Amino acid sequence: MPAKQASHCEISVVLPVLANTDNLRRVLRALRAGLAQFPASSEILVVAEKDLDDVRRIAEEEEAVFVNANSSGYGTLVLAAVESSHGEYILTIDPDAAYPMDAVRKLWLARTDADVVIASRYVPLSHVEQPMLRHALSRAVNLFWATVLSTPLRDLSSGFRLYRREVFKRLSFQSASLAFLLETLLKFAGNGISVKEIPFHYKLRSYRRAQAHGLRLGLECLAHLRTLWRMRNSVECADYDLRAFNSRIPLQRYWQRRRYRLLMNFTEPEARTLDVGCGSGRFIADLSGGYGVDLRPEKLRYMRSINPLLAAADGLHLPFPDASFECVVSSEVIEHISDENGRFLDELTRVLEPGGVLVIGTPDYGSRSWRFFEWVYGKVAPGAYAHEHVTRYTLATLSSALESRGYEILAQRVRTALDHGHQGSQGFRDDRHIRVLTAQNAINTKAGHAIHNPARNEADWKRNSMREIPGSTITPRKLW
Image 1 (cartoon, helix red, strand yellow):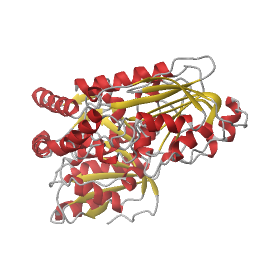
Image 2 (cartoon, one colour):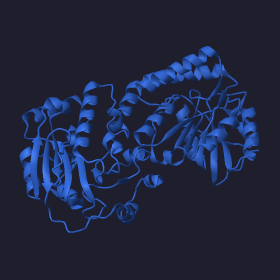
Image 3 (spheres, one colour):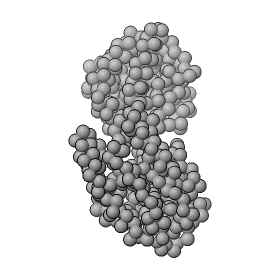
């Protein structure tokens, strides 16, 4: 008899069936018996192509919900099941699983550890029962993809996963085939969605079918290799900045590390510091007690476990009281603001204490070498940042803008196009004359602007301001 689907439940267990399976009835009975004793309300969904009539009959006889995908492909089946499900969590499982409830229990217990949990064959304490050659080949394939796509995950092809429903509401997926398994992980990484692997007992009833699926997965992913690689290495990827610090590309690694060293040298470790446009860079990760704001919530979601003092905010309307910080940093942000006309500098000045330190970096459009470099870069990488540089300061115009706001310029440093041609960050320092430098060009300036608001102490600042900021990662779930 067909199951009556609940309007709401805590967990939806999904079995995507790509072909008729003799094991389906046994798995459904094991799940039904196990979920009856489960500490959470649940539903079981079997999703298959429209022509698999035997699958429909078995699902209905075992009181599971049958979902007709009306199309083929693993990704299509999973998304169809998600659309028809009512659970707060979506748990996918291989219909050939020998111990389905082992995976369900372990995934459910880890549900609060990450947004997506993967039952992995290749993490410590996993117990895998499969032919040795198949195990070795599967592990090698997963290692290859993990290396190519620069991910720490070990079992990218596992179909045993637990998803928070929100991840499907926020993202869209294109892969209809088994490549869906890799695409989802890349989309999660790109949007700062946390993923965790846990050990489990892996054994299938039919390894012949699993071997065929593994071969199809490999071929389908290879066909999309270029797309997958570009997706993973996009500058929009949530962890792009932090990964670039350890990039296998020497020039990229050099640039990120040099910029990091200069920024760290420009700031005092104990100063109350704000990084405007922090992204997911190493600087905000290592800045002790540093606060960060960025427009991109996916970057903040990724960084929430590293530095919780982050908020989604517009750099032109910072949600902080006047004179809140001893140091304000903004590296390579101002050039992206259209019609800036000094508004960004005014806002940074507003939240900076009198006598505080300001560090700001932007390309020097007075440099011929930089203008040539950017033109070439725009031709070579048309999808990169070059076309987004809409506010173009020169060393002279930026210096003038700063001096007109009461800053005294103390020093400067200019980098050439060979070093990415940026006019490094402008540094401003307090009365102790601390040397301030960042990436590219640097100008050290004493802040002399008239701000009469007294600086808040740390406890008052966090109590009065941070809790009011929409999207603050002090409460990580607010970033959804």
